[in-house]
Length: 184
View 1: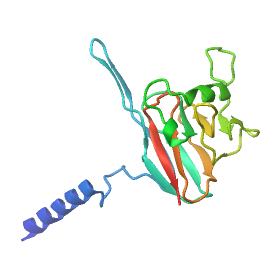
View 2: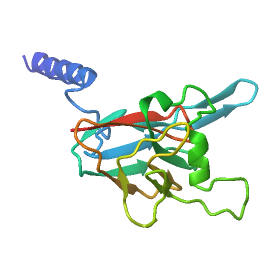
View 3: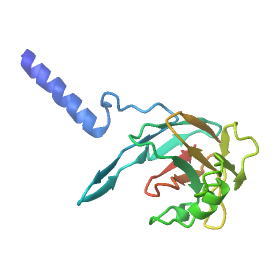
View 4: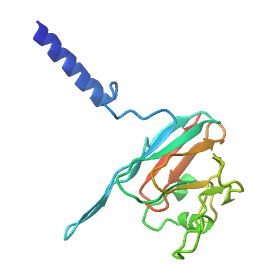
């Protein structure tokens, strides 16, 4: 009888994990947190694989919420959360919406150029130490809200878009990294 109960409990836990009822150990993401995960793998004579990504893919928050971004990828790559209208999410390696953002962030091959970490409403933020207020989406003609991440230190931004908004974002360095925030 005890063995039957143990098997039933184990089976229930396994089914629960498969359907998302019981989180796997260490898999829980804190509320209002975006995690950058993944790695870059180079195999000579075979190819490369870069599976860096944002998790969760759809974060739901209330307007006025502060969101924390944690870089837990296994690379030292810089990242961005660059907010754009849905139709301007990248579909290839040269997204049109990234052009204005590279300029606004002052990203160039000039080793003396100082990157601008925060772009607010399509312009460098007046206060580069404050939390970015996310409410403006960029296009291929102009940047919206965007923040750069260098290193592993967590960063935060405030969602100020009204309830009902969907805030699509991608990484200008890794255009396949895409996700959204749904504002309730």
